[in-house]
Length: 68
Image 1 (cartoon, rainbow, N blue to C red):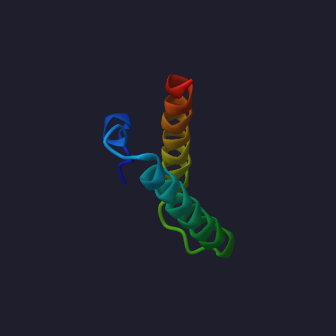
Image 2: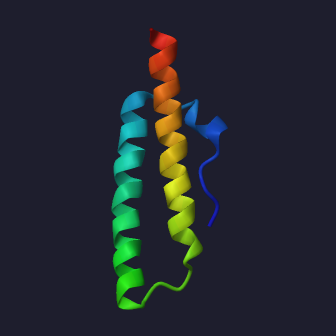
Image 3: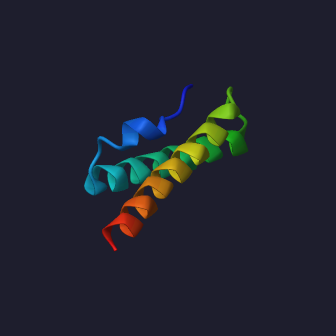
C-alpha cells in the first residue's frame, strides 16, 4: 500500500484535506481494531496511514503560515 505523496496534496483545497484526514483516521481505527482481534494481515498499513495523516496535517499547517 502506497501512501499519499506531498505533491498530490498541493492540488487539494482545505475542505478536501480535512475530509482526507477524517477518512484516514476512520481507516486507522478500523485497522487498529483488526490488529487487536488478530485479523490484520499487513501491519505496515497502520504506519502508512499514520504518515499520510501527518503529511496532510503538515500541508494544512503550511497553508496557515502562508496565509499569515
